[in-house]
Image (tube, rainbow, N blue to C red; front, side, top):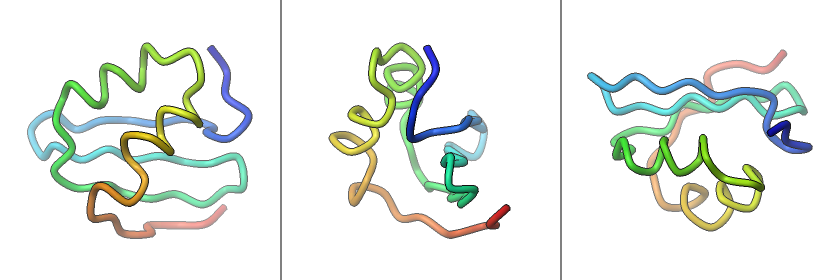
Length: 67
């Protein structure tokens, strides 16, 4: 389901990092994200709401680029 907040996201199982690119063009890499969080984000009806409730301010992150 498309999101009005998140453009796309990828997950590296080996490194347990979640990279999220927002519609604003800002891209962040979240560290030590359990696979369950990624799978639930993928399945969420509202990706933005899931992100705010389960990822934002819960994992260390680094801004990696801005388009």
